[in-house]
Amino acid sequence: MPIPMPEQGSAWEDLRAQMQERGAGDARWREGRTAVYVFNAGEDVARVQREAYALYMSENGLGPLAFPSLARMEDEVVGMGLGLLHGEEESVGNITSGGTDSITMAVKAARDFARAERPGGGRPNVVLPFSGHPAFDKACLLMDLELRRVPVRDDLLADARAMRDAVDEDTILLVGSAPSFPYGLIDPIAELGEVAEEKGVWLHVDACVGGYIAPFVRMNGGDIPPFDFEVPGVCSMSADLHKYGYCAKGASTVLFRSEERRRHMQFDCDDWPGGRMVTPTLAGTRPGGAISAAWAVMNYLGIEGYRAKHRQVTDAREAIERGVAALGFEVLGRPQLGIVAFTHPDLDIYALYHQMFLRGWFAALATEPRALHLMLSPFHAQVTDQYLEDLRASCEAVAGGDGRAVTEARYS
Image: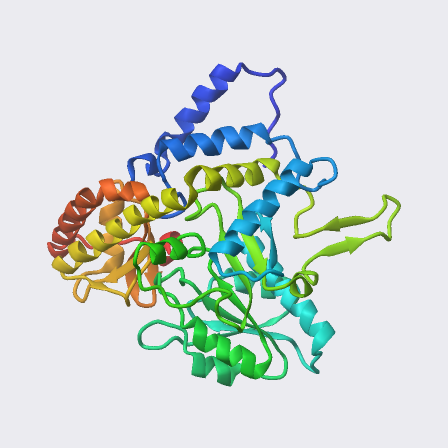
């Protein structure tokens, strides 16, 4: 419905007050009561995000000749990501607007690589686990690719053998997650790498959630299996800076083992009167603030800072695991990073979610199996006791007959 623009402008003080009033009913993430969408690493990191973003908020990553500072910062951010994820000397990448952007561009690159190197006779297809992110569905829809979702194993990890059976001559991409979003579990990437090499198929690792936490959890002593370019069959990865990299939204990285792979992602057009236009990713204009804030946060935290932040995350997850087990819940699989999902044998999960929502908590749900789902931030280490106390009260309310439940469509 059209809305008339005000005839005259308003004072910023009045607009700011109105914006704050409108946000009064939003999820209370600053209090640690949101375990999805926002990654709260503390006010010090938030300040770096804001100030670094503002310094370059008008600059445009589309023009590296005009803004070589942004090009240099992007190269350094990508280089640090490749350093963490076992990139090789010839490995390359770019900053994108988010995980869906990174995944879409990786799918596009794999499709065009297949067209050039191993054209098949049928409709190209992508093979991924049932737990793979819907961004792959979106990418396949945009590019008219067939998507083949393969059931996961009983332990909720990708079934490499079944995925191998789903690969044929028209398969352009094999996908594994590190970790999967619904369960927070790292797929057997080494096994998928063997399948990819055997079949001669591009393997992409979706590490949007895990790319900038798993290396530091490993440094902290966590038993993290090979999941990145350390696995020979991995051709590309997606890893979000604005998740566990604690950078400002929207910033992700799409990384490639070699320039030979990345060049199939890029767009190059000179058949128009405006001259040659080259863009590395889907976007034209690329917000300079997202690039500068990512560079600033990564350099502000450094390895020691990230290790400390991620120690808080895994400590919070382990406390949640112990607490929910004491309440009769079953944790799905063996989480190792920042996501934990847990189900209950007797209580309605959706009713429990509603009870927690009434108590001010906003998180997510898994649907198969039905489970409560938390994606934790460093700040959550301060509120795990309160979360568990409210969960205990919610269990008592549901067990006592309060069956009000959310719907899958609204909160899944």
